[in-house]
Image (cartoon, rainbow, N blue to C red; front, side, top):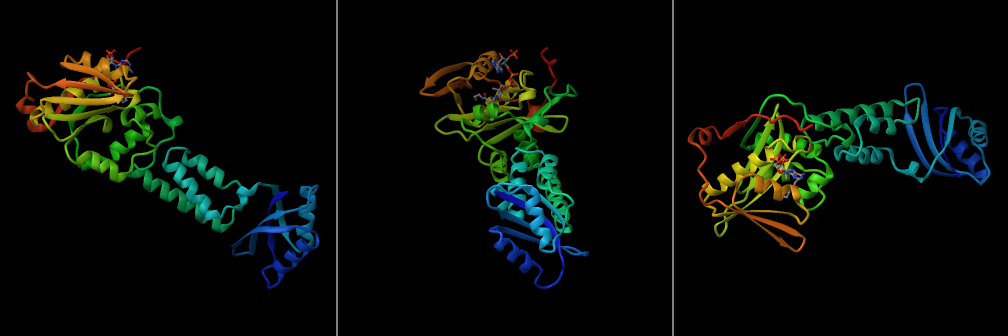
Length: 327
Ligand SMILES: CC(C)(COP(=O)(O)OP(=O)(O)OC[C@H]1O[C@@H](n2cnc3c(N)ncnc32)[C@H](O)[C@@H]1OP(=O)(O)O)[C@@H](O)C(=O)NCCC(=O)NCCS
């Protein structure tokens, strides 16, 4: 049986040796030991394996008989053997990926009370790092935090993207459901990292963003034209879907491709993409749809498309009034 034990030992040479000898005499194996120095004494945390049949009281009595004060004992698993800083780093990774809220993460990490000064310092450092990453848009909000419907405020702006949209794009990805992300990339993408976000925004080709209330809520890319053809991809955040943003992004992306010299625009998605097909045909663009294995390939002709009006091209932005939220 495994036990996690916390105790305060006298801060003098040999006190830990007494405890180790006592454990040995009773066939209790010490598997892990962490020492937390403090102003008033030293707190030791041990992971002990006792013979079968031992109870909490037996373990506490053993430690007290070796001079331990303030003894607390709890049953545990091998997980308790993971080194403390490593555990903090793993939990930080889960928070960044959106698997855990920062509050739940800290509650799990600080399950032992009272906390030692070392643990206070670790918790404070953890909270500081999470805050900083969150401010930079690098923390994916957990799915439970995503509100059901978007607030209906103001207008949606469709414009060319820039470096300044990096944090907004990453935050938008974090708010998207796994299904939406999967349909867009054709693969699961746990989180969009800084490098990929920057490459998507200012790499080759052109990127467009739809912005509402300061948040990026939609995104389109237009790849460079090759053999008269440009590839376009679209992504609209779940709670902003069905408001015409995808149609608007598709229109802007197709016109951009036409300006770049493309005769055809290609959009790819999983074979099961009712949204993409309905979107393209509803947009009024001339398109052909083909199934190629598991992939849906939509080819849109740019012939006859009017160029972007001069004033819009100059500002690089068009303002689209919101349609009412569907009931
Ligand atoms: C596809 C996508 C870009 C559409 O964005 P959007 O902002 O919701 O699109 P719109 O609001 O302009 O929709 C226009 C029309 O497309 C159709 N449509 C959109 N989403 C649909 C859906 N989930 N199911 C069926 N039809 C849909 C509807 O006919 C809709 O008109 P309506 O709302 O009046 O019925 C968005 O759903 C998305 O990002 N999905 C994840 C990625 C993806 O599926 N990509 C497809 C492969 S490219």
